[in-house]
Image (cartoon, rainbow, N blue to C red):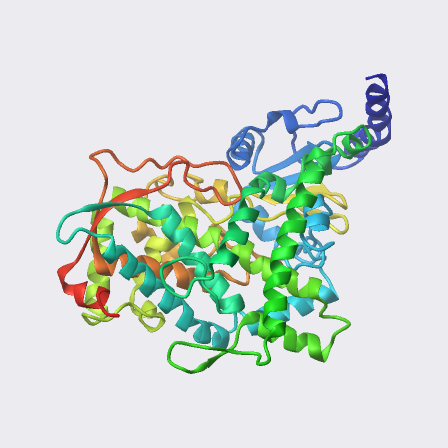
Length: 508
């Protein structure tokens, strides 16, 4: 115990004193009183975005905090956000060094955690061309439509004719988005009743059991209090390393399986040839084997899993919950679909441009429950100023999208579900007030694909089934803490097939 006290005292002198001297010389943002060593870590509850929203209400929309030995800047206003991602965009384009980047992102080589520079630009270009370009999105529409059709028919088979039937939707949405992601990566399916790779599914589910919590995947306590590693507090790090090894082995299986095949494509249901993401990346590896190592390929695949499954599934769950609590909006969205998609045909990508209200529903869902309530952290590479305050190098930037999306100074009745607000000027991104996918150089490149998946799945469910709440009470809208704020209670609903869509649901 004496050794622990000694380390705490040394770190107090080495880290806190220089910061206090710096504060006297710089015009820094307001800050709550910090405790020695831990700084403001004692203020945080389970929902970090709510805690930071409350602190911004007390101290202002530009807030300086101390997470252990790391300086943090929290911004919660459109004007401050605009400064961050316009004049300071390059300065703030890096990610902070942390255990997640080191242990979970292949030593900062994976796209999300890669430092801003040449390597990041290459990965961005690969993602833009091979995954998120217009041509790639058009090719992948086959997989999206196929999986959504599977979902509709699975629900129909579980229904009870013309009677309302109970269904738990959270697991179905997760299975849908995972099947779409796996189909894009390898051409395989993990869930359902047809063409399922059961062995691969069991391996994936085993990995999920050991996945660290959302906050640990974001930044660890050891990132803020590194001396804990020196005094034996390494259990968290070991857990992260153990999880990464299992996940790495799983991703390697996906690559080796495609590599063993003589052809770099698989057969689709109609006999046409289909390219998978792994195939495309292995061709890049053949051309430049020294650069596109297996770890680089696994890093790209990893982002597809982490950014393309839970985010879309949780957004679907929130959207259905909101519509069940507001049946008039549900009916309006359904009527729009009925009027613009011919009867007997399932909604497709080409229909989305004709369905503006459906997009308003999704935008309003993302406003109330953004994909990431706190945008992924940035870090300053040099000194800059934001809102007239000085920001010194190596300061971590947190943008509280949750607080901006629910600010009564920006939005009328901010906690109310009003899709119509996105029909006019309030739906524009003017003023940096609607930022569910981030901003600047590191804006999420997969937003277009995510919107497509959510729009098609939600549209198909409204098109094919009648929906209602399980009881007279409204759906519980409380959230669990985490990077993607899942619902605390999985969504259950009552449903039955619409007579006009039964022929579609029963097709082989």
